[in-house]
Length: 167
Image (cartoon, rainbow, N blue to C red; front, side, top):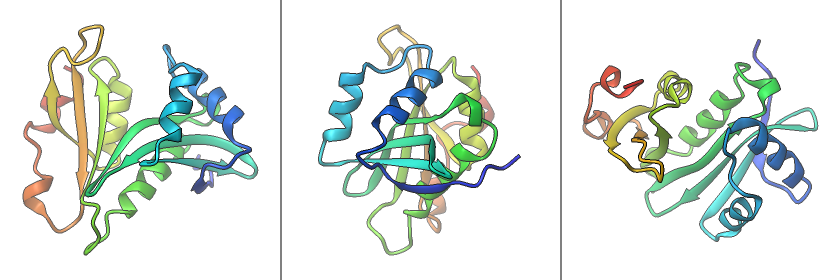
């Protein structure tokens, strides 16, 4: 069932909801201090997905000259599989407008997080490369990306999609 949500910029009333989602979404959530430090950077934007008055998901992104780097994306466990993550990614993809400066969205996923890999594929992101042993525990990093429409050469993955997901 699709949950109707509104995407908006993080507000001062949102921190508790974000921390709740972060701690329900990940086996090893980021420490609160790290999350706050990341969100405080000038180039960082935090978006929230709101259903009614309840924050049900969020995306923390870093915006540079030409790309959106998704640093954290999470949906509260009670609202997963309801389109919330898809709405967040869709909003980010909508920022890649023709003639605009933003050309690419990039997001890293651990090799073992197959559910996230399949989700990203379903939103149109493609595995662009694999960084062997990238994470501190030695796990491989799968880099997913989406490019602004109209640049087919940039949209081609370095690997076939099936070669990236779940290996």
